[in-house]
Amino acid sequence: MSWLERLTGGFKKTADRLGENLSGLVKEQALDTSTLDDIEEALIASDLGPEASKRIRESIAARRFEQLDERGLRTILAEEIEKILAPVAKPLDVWGFPRPHVILVIGVNGSGKTTTIGKLGHLLQEQDYGVMLAAGDTFRAAAIEQLKIWGNRIHAPVIAGKEGGDAAGIVYDGVKQATATGIDALIVDTAGRLQNKAHLMDELAKIRRVLGRLNPEAPHDVILVLDATTGQNALNQIEVFRDMAGVTGLIMTKLDGTARGGVLVAAAEKFGLPIHAIGVGEGVDDLRPFEPRAVARAIAGLPL
Ligand SMILES: Nc1nc2c(ncn2[C@@H]2O[C@H](COP(=O)(O)OP(=O)(O)OP(=O)(O)O)[C@@H](O)[C@H]2O)c(=O)[nH]1
Image (cartoon, rainbow, N blue to C red; front, side, top):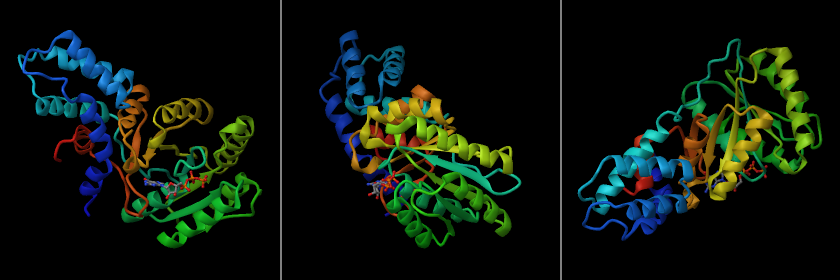
């Protein structure tokens, strides 16, 4: 299957849900206030968030339709969603010099962090960048093992230590080795225990201090991985991690398994942070930067 086919397939549940919520709302008559209210509510119920839903409602109202059928409504929705997504759809750029460009990856356990690191590494390799992974989530042995498996899968070296070891030390070793071997991008896994915020903040602060001593510009990116299936919760996580960890961009995963893909639009409108890529599956090729138009049409349930 091509990426576009996987994308449409991935957003199918989201599009179906949106379709159900919107069904029967537009009748063969001019749009009145109560219909606009219903449309806005349907968008909120489809996880697009109050801000984006209101914005879309206002755009529809401003167009002063005499008549609007369901297909017409979907087309406008796709256009409006595209406008919201376009400013934030920014592929990750490996710009840091001296190399390596350091990417810290953060997010709560189970968000798909480790898998995303593997897929992101593969994506950068496809652009001819040399990639190294660092197992900075030393809290669980399984996380270290899983990162090694991904390293094998994409043929990227993995810097890892023992369970319970010092994450900042791993990152230090990672930068040293990446520098020595001419690696372009060092992708660092980090622990994701939000339950113990103070400890997590200390750990991230220490990683930053160590990195800053090696290269004042590092980390060049701090990417938060979000699990789309958690809906509103994903938005709360952006708020918490933005304030705590200085998030510079987002990757949203698991958009394939959920009817809550509208949360991508909510995140874009509410936070305006770059969204570097989206994940629509567990395979190595299932993470990509996205075309705002294609995603908007997939969410609206229109052919791409
Ligand atoms: N369907 C689907 N599953 C995904 C996607 N990304 C990750 N997963 C799955 O989500 C589960 C959790 O992913 P991990 O990468 O282990 O998550 P993590 O955040 O590193 O979690 P810990 O290792 O527990 O810290 C795994 O089973 C992944 O295969 C995606 O885009 N789509």
